[in-house]
Image (tube, rainbow, N blue to C red):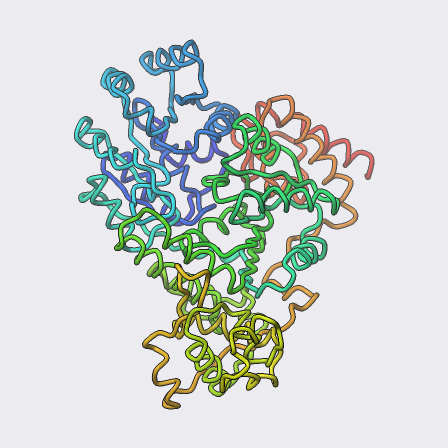
Length: 602
């Protein structure tokens, strides 16, 4: 039997384990259960793939990501691993072939959708098959409080009841303490060893800006920082997704829409193009992306506020899975808060659920308005710590200025009270700035004591104040009153003058990007020809095998070839990401490219 390290080196082509991978793998190989929290890009899949190859029998992977199973299986097949899947995309004949391969012990890994696994036919099949382990991927889907809840996950404790001798591993990149406890309880993992690898993604630069013509802001961001690179743009509504994708195409970008309202074949085509082509921008609702394996997503941009820090963390985590620098840009405004609070209030959930959703939104607003290191706040939410400011978020790179806003805040709160606590921010700002708009006059708001007392500040400055007062909990949004703002108990000492209020001063977004801790490594001019030739070779092989280019080799592996310029198979095998199978399948093609380059430049 091969050791885990032999399997890592010869099949996957990596010289050594990272972090707690080895301890997790040893736990499963010895037959124990494990709960693993590991950031996206941290190498979670190896934690169950290697034990599945080392232990006798087949590793059964439960995953909600039906659209990705084919790519995951193709990637393993390219490594020489015998992998298959069972989901609703297969014909009956294909299902029977896969089931027979399972019974004949001809599979190392089998990917199954949770709804398929729970069918009596599948459970009976597994009773007759040699099983190495069960891997429950995206385990946070079990949490009823979570943003990706799947009802089928609640029934996965059947694995413990029906197959008590088969070790299980539950994995997720997104789980706060409460969600972790729920995973343990609902999946009966009380005896499992827990591995919390930390949540930090130091290669991602987090930036949050107030909305100020968001299309212009996005266009500037893409052209200045990420031209000809792959990324994801998230929008809250389907309509906005389609409009944004069309607009980006008119601006010269290769942008595709993705949301649950599009026909399934079109969604599949767009996802396939995003995975296989270069420099594609996917404009999507949160229906897209969970578990995306594409390693070279260089940016994630949110044009609307996510509902929670969990959602924000997971969605931004789709950037920079290869460890190279990536950017997470969020544009938000008070209108986002109003819209989300109205959506939450009108949902069918119980009051306790709505209350929890509001608390999570409040935490998200706190992250947006913080004046200290964003990464420290983000990690603290998941009970993780970062001792020093990260130096790679906007508040570290360009520390925001704060100001004593006590007097303007009292004016704003008084105006909310005087107008009856039922008007939105725009109307309140008109009153404060002394507008003569017909609505102001018809309501008699020009006769209020707060009328015109805020002429010294611009409408933009007042919008910033209103937004921060909502984020800080001094004002609440009336979900039933078309976004009207109401006072909270928290504002009493402020109105009395007993408590000062300091706010961050919004600045116009600078055209220059804050300096990242580490820039994407530039290819030397002398090596550019070889770099393009290696990428062309990879693209040709990917097309021939019907897989995304990164399944052949990641960019990091091509860079290593560029630096080391191997000329013999044994030299190629020393490069991280090149295992025995890939050397046999693809090594000669890449060696030919390098030898030709060396010959013509010698």
